Length: 252
Length: 257
Image (cartoon, rainbow over all chains, first blue to last red; front, side, top):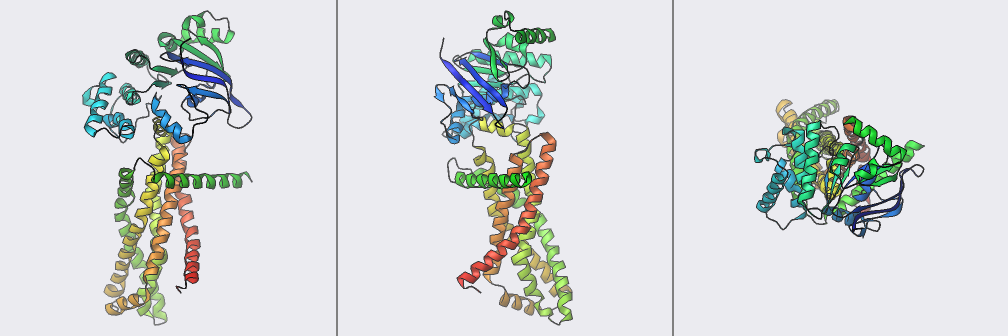
């Protein structure tokens, strides 16, 4: 098995000390893979994601990201460590008082302070070109561009620091089928254009997961129910997986 | 009991946020640009409303004091009494209330919107320390701007007082200024400025805290803004009493009375 980018070892998480959201999660996401984490609502997908980013700390167990144990890191070390991530949010989460170009330039201004502004904007423009956003939109505010363009801009911003891990948090939820396909293709293109980069997509869109991911982890009740390829899912005898697959594929 | 618990918990959380904000001001990267941006918003954009309200505060207060002092034939004391009231109490308190309603409300709403739109999460995962980027500059800006705005308030309110006492009621201008000169000392003005700096920290902290911890969409933003402004205003008035006593105690200890 190749090197792991993210390793969950018996991770348990409770917020109130009584009910566990994660109940002993074990998962290894391979470096350079495009992995989808799927599951019904409330199965712990987002909590799992926030553990990868170090926003939540496990109640017990350990999480290793790119060979580093997140447990002993201070919050400031974690803040620094997060530069290795690029995250595309469900809502794109663009800064509404900044133009498209400024949004993409922002992480560069924050973390590449030795770069001159002209160079920063040059890199930002390059990232926007990579995700297929035309230059006529660069000076517009996020509210002045379409949802699809906002996603592209959000992805360009996530790529600004050349992250080692790109995380897609429900990237297609609430989008129409055409836009969904566009975002799916964008994820695959971005992943293929950056060999060695690990992509993790959290979604409940089974069809998209099967179409674009190399590996899929299905969560249920805070544990990994099945981790494998699309084929493994089709051939699974686990009742819940069979139900999820049949419902998910029927919907498409 | 649970309300008391959550109140104590919230005060504790705010204290931690304040301590973090102060510590992070001195840590790189520098947030000077952010501080200046917030100073422009809190300070510069408040000058108009502060000037207008202080002018009429000076006029109204002087009229009431004049009417009262006329009964006991002490109208030549209107100037110093109004000046002391303005410099020590009304200047910092009214400036605090107006600025917390205007700028504090905007702070809570802005941060609340950023929270519900995942913009704060985006900053977090980008490796940006959100306390340092969002909270510290607001607190520093309010701390610097509040005394400056109080100076504006004091000055314009005294202009209002002068208009009423000298121009409208036609008391002697020399007496008006002479009496103020004899009564008002630098420490009276400083008392107001110290209070206003504290009020600045209080409203910026409370409103930022409420906005930063907003939950639940547009409704949550509205609630955070409302609670931030209300708590700030109540705290300004309550703190004013305790600060006045504290300053008086300091004067007694230092032998300044």
